[in-house]
Length: 182
Image (cartoon, rainbow, N blue to C red; front, side, top):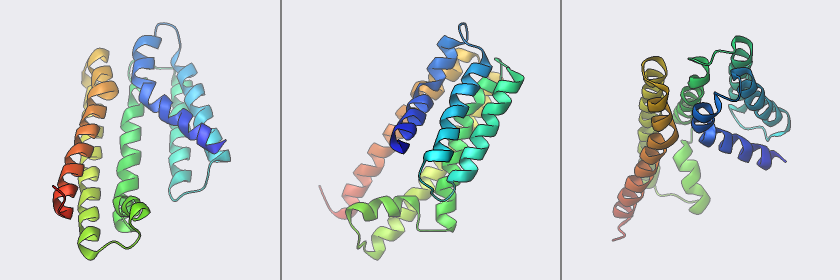
């Protein structure tokens, strides 16, 4: 059940910019807040407990309550991608402080005994992701405040995911080179 809720939140996050852009004519902001808030509440109640998951859920539920209460189609609806970038920045950034870094944890799933060189590398990659999420969140915030809805939807719904994919690809290529693979 918790995987299903996690999948629902992932899909809601991916489709959110399009739902806002195309759904504002048919749905009120409070309905977006109710749907998202329900998913986050279900995750908080039924999901697995991980470090930071409680504060993330509380923050997201608070955002959804504000969305439902203020029912503001102009600005409040558009802050969700900023919130997600802030969550990711917090998750990756805290892992640098309270280690091991997120990327090291992921690397250890495939290779439990990482060499010292790989540990340093995974820390650097985690820092790169922190910078990405900071820049992504700032750009999404700027678009939320000053850009037309179509620009916001284009960036938060397509371009930001393309940039993430590009960062994944570049990191993979660098990793192959660092590991000595052609």
